Length: 97
Picture 1 (tube, rainbow, N blue to C red):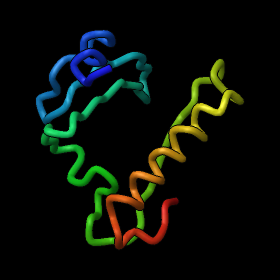
Picture 2: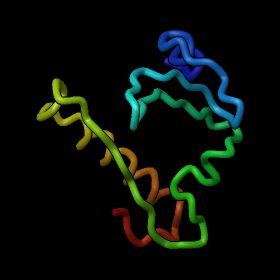
Picture 3: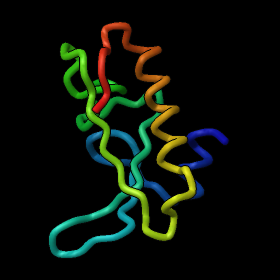
Picture 4: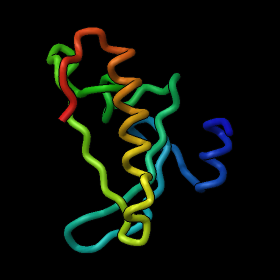
């Protein structure tokens, strides 16, 4: 599946600051979105694919798993993939938190 297929399947629209998105849920204090940034996209939200502080040798990862999806290994697989990519792309990266 290519990025364009995901954009179409999820009904994402161009974000004015780069990438594609769709709000999936909101209440008075928070919101959830799908956000896709293709390799060739520029975004005001993301300055570096691994960390927002490219001169700092650490990166933070935040995630949320929907209650109905808990204990299926989704976050574990995603975080393992992300960690492998992060350390492969950033030779100066020493920690993920």
